[in-house]
Length: 182
Image (cartoon, rainbow, N blue to C red; front, side):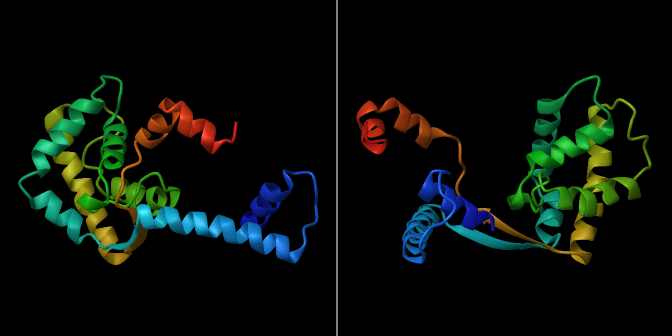
């Protein structure tokens, strides 16, 4: 329904409610070809995140320096341990074995239950780096165990979208004008 309404809106500029089947196919074909071209440039990888990569990260040599770096990036005296852990998890990615924490399902079914199960320290108290390192590892191990029980399938782009393509386009007046037919 969403794709249909977007196609109709694209074709009619929101002015008509009906489009012929042929016109609809043409517009839909253009949209799908554009999506395919985008996927060709930025391929999507389907990953099954089952806790193994996270365990490997937690037991690897890069774990502590990376987590200390993340702690220093989010350090704030007003933040609780809960806040630190959530923010630290959001800075990790599928390469470390963490599904996107921006997904509410991941938060409510994986992260929050892991936080609740590891409540040795009061999650609302302010936190030091040492306490954070110790408690984060406990929660991350719990997340890994939850992922073993309930793996998460993620569609992941290997590319990082940092806006450089848009900046390049905006800085080139000729290409921008050609693109928008001015």
